[in-house]
Length: 430
Image (cartoon, rainbow, N blue to C red; front, side, top):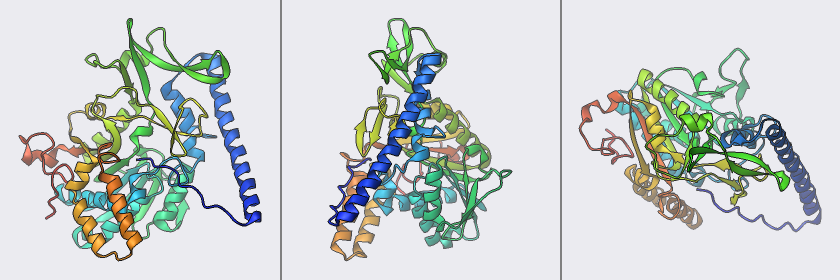
């Protein structure tokens, strides 16, 4: 999932070292200013209106338009705060590309095919998937394929444009729903949006890889007086620091978001994630297609999972807001409940099971047969182990799918998670 930051090579040139130190110092000053800006803003807000929800705290720290983490930082890769599966191995993206084509085929081979990714990171996953699409041209035929990325970070959208188009994009007019458009390296039209609602309607395969875990959550604690919301307040002993407190009385969120049958002592709920999965479900029900959600999470069993990452290390979530990634495990039971009755859900299944069902072992052997460089072979094996090892990403990450009800109509009556859907059962491409 998130790996340790590799140490930089020592610089022997004195001039280079001095320049590096000045650059690092300037970067640190900018980071400190960004951190101070959000912290002062939060303290002012709390002073004026009282403690804020964890959801509001996350929203400010991650997406504040001036100094939010996702707005200002390059958080991916070895130099960032975390590394995702597509950055670890090309095999991951290739197998998801095969999944997309498999689902398109199983749904009846629509004449139009929209690949929609939510929070595409650096574009690595989409790049690997599009390479698979090019290799399967004979299967896809004359299908009208287009790529649609939902991205709020200006910096990440630039990385994506470079990765997927060679930065051959243009800014769209204000009256257009997309804010950027271009042509991929493989010749497909590609568009960027800030909201899911702006993506055109039509048969779509939606991908959300490590997207839902960063959405704001509300935290609740069971007390003798019933459920109470966990809030963020100013620490009275250190007025320039923040702390968690439990609300004395019910809040609107604690009154409407907690399920009566929940037996846990501590619960995290992501209403924004629920709204988004409802939008996906409605589109899939009306327009056809499917969604694949890949994230670390649970099926309604975990409690306190809210945490921060900075420099590939765990980080106190209330320190340096805007300078660290904030995340919480996805509750797939909540997502399933929010999809409604017009779609079918499969999973969650572990990443290990999904990738093995998709044929990762066979794909690794093919790559090893065609690779004669010892270091490259070692990297392939290492990446494979990182993805499926139960002690690494294999069990931590879960795959969850939302499908049009008609997709599995002929297979009704089969046991849960045994339906013939790629990844959730052994792959069968015909």
